[in-house]
Length: 91
Image (cartoon, rainbow, N blue to C red; front, side, top):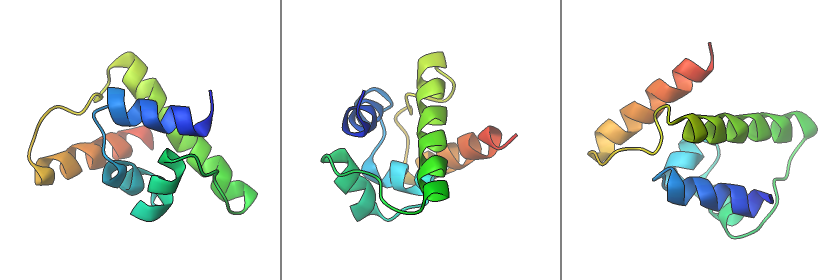
């Protein structure tokens, strides 16, 4: 599966926005929007690896239904929800 397909699957099935993914990956919205439109990941090898690992983590959470798809909630609660998910992935 391509990066384009993986990102768009997360957007749709994970009920995520480009802004959600940008926060998750620590990248600007326009960068992640580009990925969703088919651009590849650029940057040094360790940065690309970190993005790939974060993407795999999100895909795993979606498959296991651990915090994804994101339920309907306010923007503030949505940010908090994703921050809690990200903290739990660092353990």
